[in-house]
Length: 284
Ligand SMILES: [Zn+2]
Ligand SMILES: [Zn+2]
Image 1 (tube, rainbow, N blue to C red):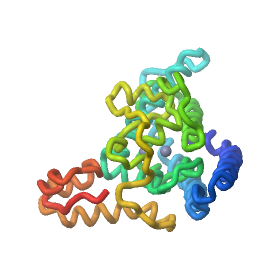
Image 2 (cartoon, rainbow, N blue to C red):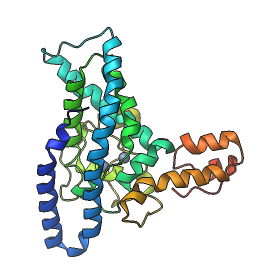
Image 3 (spheres, rainbow, N blue to C red):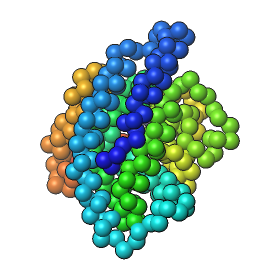
């Protein structure tokens, strides 16, 4: 977690964001939103700083679990590396799924989704404070006996993989679409069209979505963003607004159970559910 290969990739990300922007502007100036792109990049840089700080602290939890685990992977062999790529991606799937299906985690992850554009700069638009919580999902990798540096390396490569799928410039990729997460699959993930909500959580392998029933192919043109558009370019507000919305909902809720559900339930709670716990109709 301290060693982050995704940070080493920053110059390559910068070049690719610039190339894509150039292509989009030439194609049709309306496709490109300068303000949104710079907001994404600024949020990305600050998230690197926060991410590093949180990782310095949370690495100790990983190290502690690794130490007490009776299992130690023989990393000089090839197969534990394959296992680690698969295990890390599996854990990412569940981390990402909970980040959408439980409001307390959505409050962090919403940052990545609140741009109503879809381009490579959105890939680096990441929560500043997500590092508070996401490490918990990766402790099983420590328990399985993967040393911290090997986990940090493979996890970083996983995140690097996820960069290039944030583009509209790449169409379907044939048989590659069956196994791997692709721009088409991830466009669906960023969609607010009804059929696209809470779909395609994959990191590298789309197989997890196919297995766990959250797969949706790209058919209808994707509308990007969140269901209640934020309309803000203030990076601090983008990173915090969801917490205020949650607090408001908790205040509105009449019962203790209702308040708890405001924290842990899905942000896409439907009308009936909202009425049951005594709060107004869901906006998110
Ligand atoms: Zn997401
Ligand atoms: Zn994304």
